[in-house]
Image 1 (cartoon, rainbow, N blue to C red):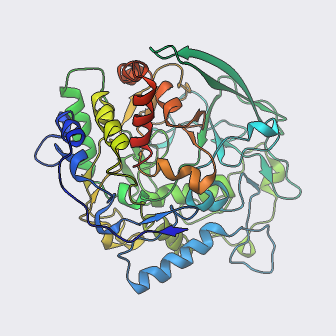
Image 2 (image 1 turned 45 degrees about the horizontal axis):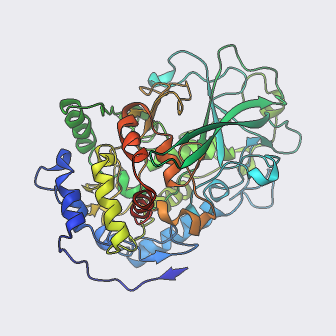
Length: 482
């Protein structure tokens, strides 16, 4: 890990920064019209972590007090360490499975970072751990959500404890899509094609839909959930009233902790409203750990071996108690976003202007001021009142047929995806050793991610296709500085 001394942030307007400010009219209501020019290094004000390297996504908010840092450490332990099969000598960490895809939260979010699809160099022989396959069938389920596959539930788990069959395996093939930039430079994108094999309990239901989801990085999630809901709804209203194709929509989803519908902001289709609800759901779906919110194992009726498998905590649900789950949620909610790098570099400033010129900020809204956390006992008051720079509107957008998964999720249709935050993108390689982006990791780096854009973002993509090599490098340099 590398830590940098906190530096003063200059507020001088460079020519490129001023240009970027003028080209962000959508947010020009006295707060962010000059946002690109005044951000500097701070991604979250005094809560910014000045860190690079392997641990760049694993730093606590620097404003935490001693008691909060202790709770952060406890939550970190339960986030990273493996759960074990029951029965075990310890009941604090037993109850893995019966079906699962990872043995810990950190198994998918390695170093609190971003997952990747199986390594191409291994001929896809390794099982996907950080690549989750969502399942559902047509229809509207509980609270307006999905209807799980009647045999395999709402996701495929490719691992299981002893005596229980893994649900199946994921097979990935690739189709090459070729194109070229206006200057004649050619490129090749690899479109993944997914299928499920060795299904242990028979075929999927007719009409079953499969959607891949890669594990995103965790730093800053507690600040994203502190963005006022009114700001997200205002994003949608401003876009609806503005000319052009950008018309984002909020997703309204069920939150297990609020016991009510809230605006979604986590998950690739914004199908979770809070860090708490996301975490409890992931404990059950990904690791097989029951909680007060999800007291029953995710064993479907056809999975008889799963139903009779031993349970953790001496057979007494839940397998994770309320305090421990709260500590894990607190840990994630107080992970600090890393500071920007190279903010005064001429290439980065040129890329900033090009980012604005291509209207990327219409969806990747630069900044917000945070409000209170939705569940104060599961976060810190230090998340409130911060100027943060995540570069997202947290809305759903039609991204065109090439990115479509064909699977609805609450209000999201089969071509819509949530705008992902861009902060930290340039540190993914340092933390996780790869540059895989988008919902399933198909894009190898920022430029490929842009080239996959379609639908509402088609015009922005076309602008990028017109850039020469120097400007393309500048655009990437800016995004990787965030």
